Image (cartoon, rainbow, N blue to C red; front, top):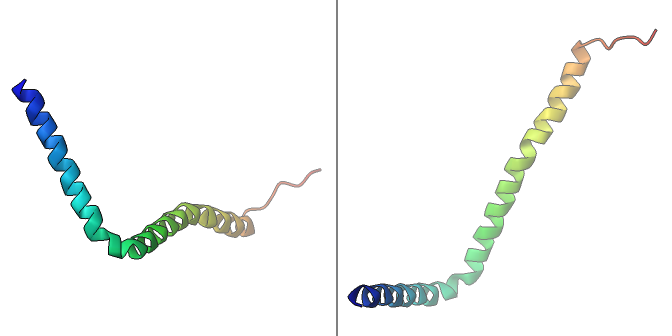
Amino acid sequence: MNEIRMRSSKATIYRLVLGALFRLARPFKRRFILILALALAGAGCDLVQPLIYRTVINDVAGLFVERPSAD
């Protein structure tokens, strides 16, 4: 029974702390959204970068490699 009370007490404290943090962060909501958008854009650019490198390397390698003739 005591263990259940401790779990309940920890959950209550956790909710209270999170609620206080959200209330403190509310005035900065737009900044958080901007930071999230920039982080997602950066992650997207990191995912696209290897595709660009692959295309460039394949184009440059094609200049030095002769293609077999279709005789």
